[in-house]
Length: 65
Image (cartoon, rainbow, N blue to C red; front, side, top):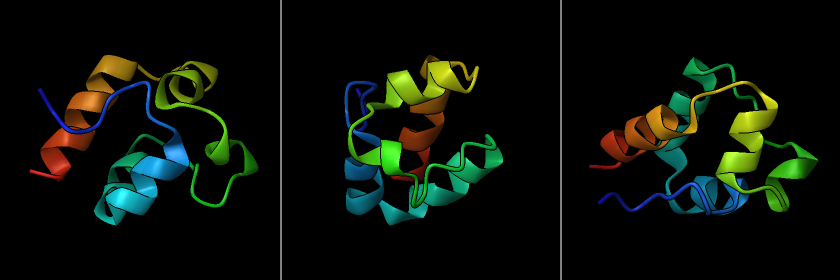
């Protein structure tokens, strides 16, 4: 299992793994600097943007391998 989970806060993911910003941008998930990133978890943000959260989690974890 990867290190990033859908339960993690978006801000926490970006702080721990800054290189995943590229993945977020590929998904048009512009959470960098968004106020919601500090309280929304990855699943909430993905659902709000119509993004497949499982695919996103897999791609984020590939990026940090």
